Image (cartoon, rainbow, N blue to C red; front, side):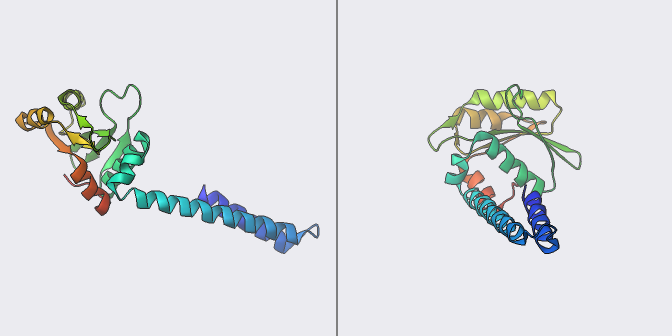
Length: 180
């Protein structure tokens, strides 16, 4: 979108300079309006980026935006990420691969007091087994229930179960990268 706006600004400026119909003022006015639209979009994008660096900002996001932010963190870590989220995602929002490792990722954007139950971790584990992932990764802005944490810790072998909750997500947001 930003590229299209910049191209439109360049086109309007070119028309104003060429001035085939004696309407240079109109070309410059259009270029000015397009520059303002571009700057407003840029400011909005920067505000979104800034809020994505805090746990409160992440909790305020739409679930799909949170999934995209987690995907962005993984890409910065060198992972190739495929989005699968939405209705019927079979418990996997993201599938990430890097050097023979495959992450089956479930993203849960929850409030501070909401806990992820053990059933969610079990569903993710089953989905990771079905996709032959090496790691089942749960990323949540909420908390993980004691039962879910115990169940995840009791799993041995592959896929390995990794749970990153509110504190870990806050650290990832500050770094802009998710590390396992």
